[in-house]
Image (cartoon, rainbow, N blue to C red; front, side, top):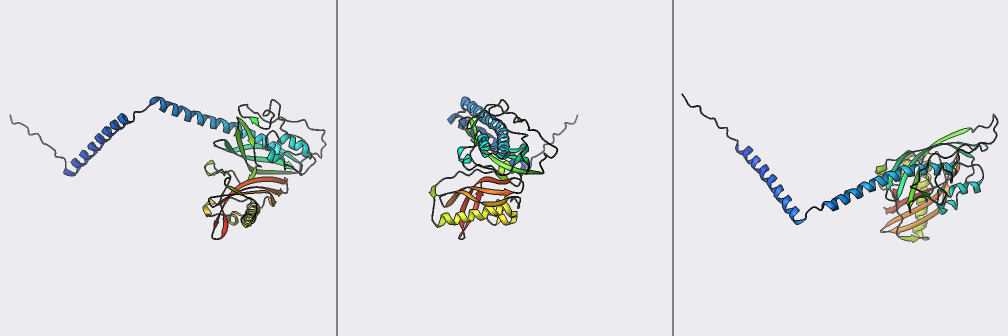
Length: 333
């Protein structure tokens, strides 16, 4: 019987070399890993503690975000609900806003809040940024309908700030006085507004006026500006940056997005303007600090709207000097 020949298939030189290289790389990785583990052994206890801490931090941030959105909604109801009595108005505001806000808090236009809903939240350390959609009715003798009553079981606990660990439900509804057929609000106003909710000692507090925005801004795009550096209270820098801030705010309220883009160091940093829906009525408070060639502005200003009337606003801005002009590098939303 004829013996069958075994046919041997030879691997080409290139393929054989490639396989050898891959094999040696794999073996090298195994050896290197073993050496590293010998030098720096993995501490499973430390790894577990790290993972647990991160999970706890994320859970706390999610909890803060959920609670802060309700707090912001209630605060905005208080901020816009106005019956013509500024003393009563400030009394309700003190359970949500800091004393620095209460000093100049006042309204003139009778306003009823129909609805407030948070549409975007972003947690950044001890500050939660909440964007809300608000619907109000205006320009008619006041008819209380939805009024937050701090101190009841349906609202956050009464204090200068509210305990973040206590649950808060929808604001209570105050009884309406006797109404006749003509008792109807005659204009509805719908807008977006941004609120910065601080977490201090386990409690919530709003330390600046809410700011009108064109539309909700993605969380990834939102920024927080911390004022730092040497305080400037007079001189050419002070007056020139104050004038630049005045022009920027006027354009933000009344101009177009294209107009506003000229103020920024880069066109990509531009934001949507309010496109004339609010009239800029001037700066009420201006603070300036300088650090490493950058100018940090904290400004309180007044706007006017045909429906809402006069409303105070706050904003933080970073300016830098470029080509002899003060340009906006960042705003706080």
